Image (cartoon, rainbow, N blue to C red; front, side):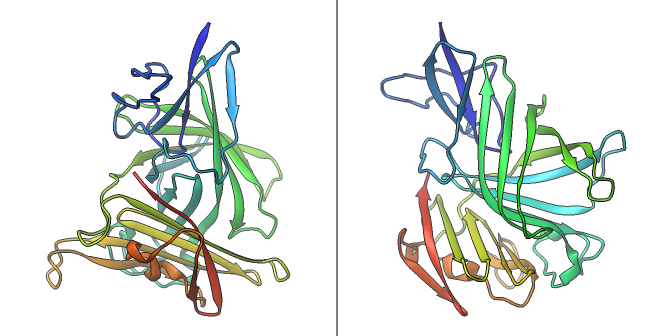
Length: 302
């Protein structure tokens, strides 16, 4: 029996039970919805396929821009105290930032205003992701934390992703409660934002990833830019610096659009501004920003 298994990028729209037409020789993705962004493989026999694609070039996967709609600690009620954006690259690099709205200088961080309060970061991490889907349509995703604002010993988290009728994705899983030492059940509801070009002057669809590390000091940093969004995190000596940028149109002083810093936390400069012009980003080169030289580990187009 031939089983069609969809290895879906994290937080993206899942379409596993109804697989569109896929040619095993030409590997055509014709017929797949633009928000589905699946990498399909045909495998003979077996009921489960697990593929680790951490940091690997896989251009049949598109990047994603994911917005969290709510968080629910079971059995509590859904709420959303944060502005949470997750950028996932085509190579599966991830930067996830969760900024508390009530501690920010604005009411809605997704609107393109600025925030600089150091205590506004609820959680931020960066790393890589992988997924596994079985023939019964269940998909599980694992995020491997390389940098974590909450700990110097980052681990991973895992959840089952369930597509809702409106196309949103419900994530269900468990996580360690640091106060009790017990595992708590949680739910998060996610939606994907459009993969829109960052500006009319640059390539229409480009993703850029930067990374920096000092093994001796434990300093690590990662920046991911996808379309109209860019965000990065740097952790050094236990201190976290975080930036989020967004391309915003329709402003009175710039009707054609401009890049705005929507979140900036910490003392260290991040190289987000250096990759807003993607034509200057070349994979395998370095970008110098402040005291650090960042490696350009991905420049992908879709």
